[in-house]
Image (cartoon, rainbow, N blue to C red; front, top):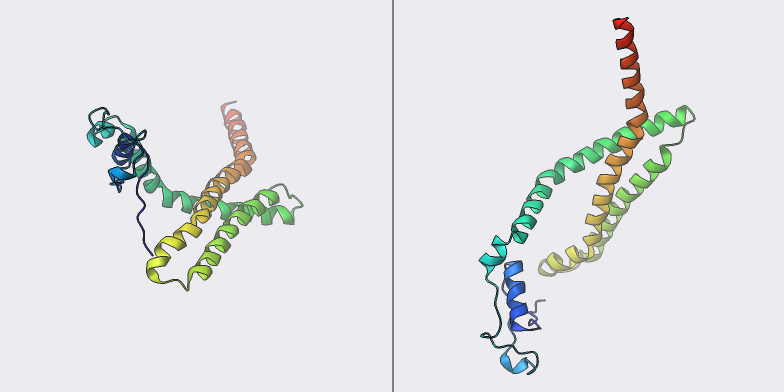
Length: 184
C-alpha cells in the first residue's frame, strides 16, 4: 500500500516547504497548473535551504527536539517514581481517613491506563495487517497514546510535587524552629 501525492500550490510555496521540511516533494507537471496558479521561476524568489536553516527556525526546532529526546526517558522514570510516591501517600491517607490525594491518584492512573488500553487495542486491531502496512497504520492509530503518556508524565510529577508541598513546608518550619532554639 503506497502512493505518492503530487504537491499542490505555487512553485515558490512548494519549494519553500521543501526547504523548511528538508525533504523533497513530487512536483506536478506544468500542464496540471492553472494559468493563474503558475508562477514563473524568474518572477519568484525561491528559498534556499541554507537560507532557511541559517534563519534559526530549523536550528531551534532541532535543538528543542534534541532536548526532548534527552529528557524524555528520565522524565518518564521520574513520573513512575512520582506515581509510586503518590500511591503510598494515598494508601497512607486511606488508613488515616485522609482522601485529598485520592482524586489526583485516580486521575493520574486513569490516564496511564487509558494509554495502555489504547495501545493494546491498536495492537490487537492492526495485528492482522501485513508488516509493510503495520508501519503506517499502527502508528496512525496509536498517535493518541503519545499524548496520553505526556499528560501522565507531567500530571504525575506536578500532582506529587503539590501533594508533598505541605510536608516540605512542615519540615522546613521544624528545621527553622530547632535551629532557632539552638541559637538561643
